[in-house]
Length: 217
Image (tube, rainbow, N blue to C red; front, side):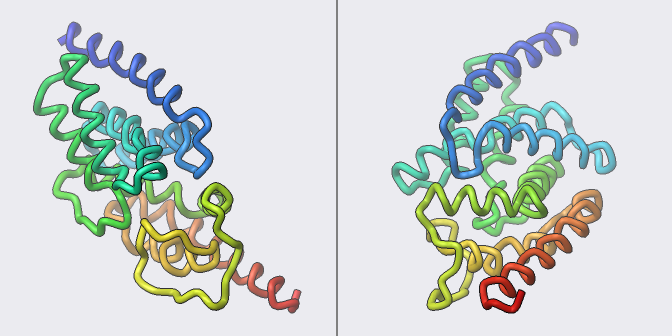
């Protein structure tokens, strides 16, 4: 058992360095800082909900590792990150069942896929990732993403419709299509509890923003 634990520890440290280097220069809000927050969120949720903490550590660490491919080629970063994660974890000789669970959680984590996960760890990863898209940090990331993709603050001629992760829209539209709906997409009680205050903060922010845009405040 000690040898296995040492293998996990060594792999985690080396993969962390790889991910940090790969995400250097990432400006859309899916950077190394985001990864660190998702890891913390996952472990915080797991304290109350249970789940395999090693699966959560590795899945959180690698969940956005191929975000660059999406920006460059328009492919789904969740699918690409899952496949990349499998190759990386196999290289470090980790158990197949463990790898399969990590890869599954990464593959289904994306909000835009609308997938209800079958495993607790995948549910926790979804929740942890989504918590980082709301509240004050979610607002900051929304503007970072818009800036990196050349999207405007608002566009009142833009249609608010079903969220499509491959369509870049204004920040205000993004709020209405996704961010204000995230709270109701969460699975675990722990995440739902955290989301309540973050959601209220966003509602107040967008209300104030719209007043300032219209010249009312």
